[in-house]
Length: 577
Image (tube, rainbow, N blue to C red; front, side):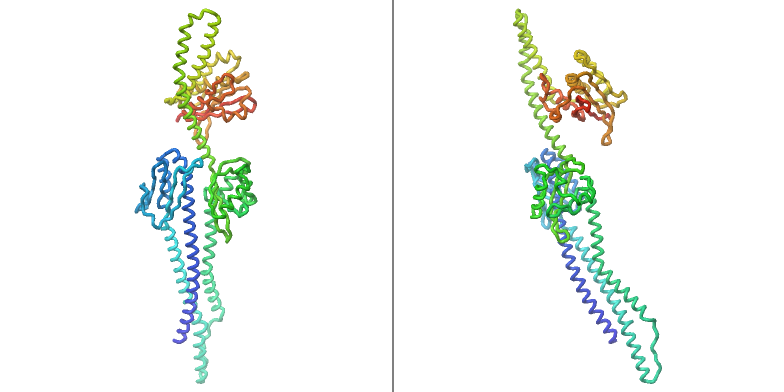
């Protein structure tokens, strides 16, 4: 009994020491994990708020409330988000989790105790137009920490039980049982008896069992390091699967690591990216210089998280708009900067198109009003000239009257074009043949082409599918394009059309080409601007009207110069489904 008590005492001492050691280690690990999870939740909250502010900018500016609600509803799958509140345009849009954790509409009033909150202003053109607050729940963090704690306690208990069994077994087989046999042998010798020591296998088997037990304990103690390696692999998988570009920067702007999306966005391999600095990824044009980038990184290191727009440079030299967010992080015990880059080229294009359409709509309203006011007195002037025509019996008076009629005719044409451009027109789209319409337009311009000794060549494919169109409005498009081409051409105007497929959709692409001097390079961006013209007696509304009508038909029109000289106008219209 004493020997067994000694074995239990040794086992208890070892178990106690091991338990305290593992408990201390588990407590430290739990604290670190808790700090990491809470920090991650705060960062996710801030990042989600910033992303929501960017996504809501255009809908809030347009007071597009259905789109605002749609963006809020899209966050229902992000479980840590407990509520989102948007205040903009004099109204509150809110979504809150109910008892079943469904994302439901709310008036913005709900209990916020225990929730994490981040707030971000909604900016458009550097003007605050609202704000968004995102509330996240620590419920999932607490569940994760509780599970982690239970795993740690279970591992400690399992280690203790194994230690008790191993220690007791080793003491009994190696120490206590041999001592008992020695005592029996000594008693036998003292009484003159024979040896009663039993022969057992050599120490090799005992040493092998001891080695296996030690390896088991080492394996248990190394579980943390195995988990750390698995965490590293998991981090790399997540790092490379993020849809936004992520770069890890040193304090001097040196790139330390990049994810797969960075290589796709900028066109570099990982090895090439690690050899770059921030200057190679920016346009190098003020304010997108290396010095500006390093300055922003230093501000981020000082604790000021930054989000700004930046001109990125692709490996092939092409520039594109990006949105950059800078956040600090401690990696391997050193302070680093996480740079998150998002491609916003399409968003910038949409914003420019929105501003252009708003400007054109305002200008259209203005010119339509002016044309309407001018038309009535102009009609009176023309009627007065007709009334006095019989009284103009001298050549001088008749010449003056003819000059007045010519100028009145020009003003009449101007008011007609102003009304065409500015007045809202309801179009009726009916599938029709673009080829037959162009045939009519070319026939209508045949006399003008003959007078100018020019040839109009029709190269339209006859097997084209129909396109939805308002025939009268689309005829005006080709009348204007042919007039413009005949004015600038030297010998030949060519009209062609073919079916093309882009973005999985079929289009009819029609081109009108001339062999004149072409557009001035500086004028290409202004071809469709109202009142812009290089013609001596031109008004500058013909191409604007073309663009207006084509866009009414869900199409697009562009201007360019031909490689062999001359201009080319391309009209792309959808194919009837």
